[in-house]
Length: 313
Image 1 (tube, helix red, strand yellow):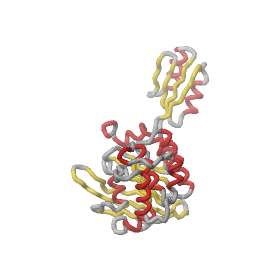
Image 2 (cartoon, one colour):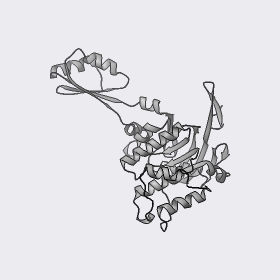
Image 3 (tube, one colour):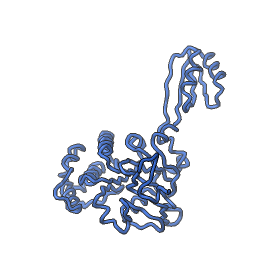
Image 4 (cartoon, helix red, strand yellow):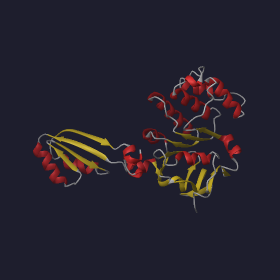
């Protein structure tokens, strides 16, 4: 059974419902720009991180999910409905935060929030007051005079205000300061507990690591990996630095350890470890240790090999 094609499938005897289904879509703009034979899904109630460098095809994929553009081939469906043919119906249960928000600069922030509520056919402002308080948003000023961060807060309020069951978020914390980024993470974790389905494109890997169940990684318009965050994070390398009482002990440890990834500088040895921390500690324990630290590879560094290195920043 192809779980990218069907809306539901069995996993370990449990029925899994795919709220968002992306099935072999291609949108070719020429010169290797676009997305190509892309397939993945977002299960009901999960938060899926959508990762890739600028120009990888994340926004092109999201625009097809919103029904703004039609794939050259393949299908995108939300709640079993074709995203292009039934865009108006889908968007009633959808919260969307675009990567580049288009505002009406003649309005102030509150006028724009009211305008958004009216467009969504809401009877009132829904969760907007609560969200404005959470993000310390004073929306009374003119939008054209607002900072990028202030505009981003308005976008977040508009995406979440109708309390949608499905959220598609394109670089949601762009322009926010670290405090507000943490507030946003708290919001996502809260929505996750409430069973919301969230697809979130982001370059902030700590954000993805803290909030997402799985991650789909895209490079040059093609899917290169999709897996659970637990499995992806378990593959991250760890670097252990051990300082011994004297240089002879450091050399003795290196001779005993016989690992090509071991580096020595006087009394300090650096060794790259995966799941072998216990082995390293046991080898080192026969010597006198004066200091020891473990540095875990960042998720950003871990993903670089999917991107092909820094040139794809």
